[in-house]
Length: 449
Image (tube, helix red, strand yellow):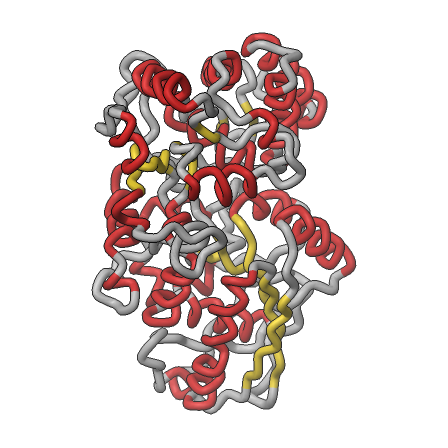
């Protein structure tokens, strides 16, 4: 989508919330400033509600610029896997909405297939781009040098723990420096309660979350070379993979994972929505969205006095010499389908929603941290200390951008960890199964030789 910006006369009026600039219609816009209706899709109820509240402000801001742009919100409540299936079908058919809000893990595949429009030229011309943290700018760039999704939220993945429960049990709540240290504490919890004390996404039922929320954060803190962005290949011989499978196997063999719950069709419900709020499962691998989306007052499973009862550890080190760390991938981002007839207007909406008070309100609603450096004093985010702390933690957190093949690796990890949950494999056997499966799924072009 390499398009020039509109004339200065059109963009002289900047909205206070966004400081937006408008695009010309060259290469996909409306051709004039006449009435245009664009569609945007959201599939999570919290995000639907937050976006719906921002649409009138965008339409008014565009009207102040002399542009008649209406927004049709496609509110379609789906699971992650259902949304992935549906939006894939729409992109293939060229029938996707003009703007889609998708997780970072879906971008490489859709971009590689040519379904998404490149955004980098327009983003470079947008004044908001200067306020994006460098690591997120870098993470948005794909192997071909283009950007296909504007990240608008992020978070820090940590281990959330029930400090009230652990304190009552006499368990140390200081930052564990190694997994050995943490496992010793978890064994003490199990001995005292008889219950599995930690949930880390694993197995087939968790879908893509087994990789994105469970396995990959631990792997990224142990080995940051498992994906080579220059060649676009995966190093399946990386020692990090086997080390993480060994960790899963140790947790499973010692009865520390809630195996039956992890094999539930919706494994996050009995673990994160039932057992963690009840305090019977006191440690959970989780992103900072948990403060709002999962356990906040309006969340899926509210925990009264949440900030008094819950705190976070960084991921402890898995190998000698590793340091505790947080994992901070780009979260959701706005992408414009290549098939859209209103690319310019769609990107204007994305920029508006990714700026100032509109962004601050959405971050608070979903419990996310800001990928920008200029929102710390913007309400309502300014009144959310846990989310501001997550933003501060971004400075020294870890993330390894990947490209084509992420879905295939995710699938292979889910299958291999399922073997561990079933008792059919130890860590080494699960790694061997993963390597074979991932090699077949990726094909020779995506596997480092």
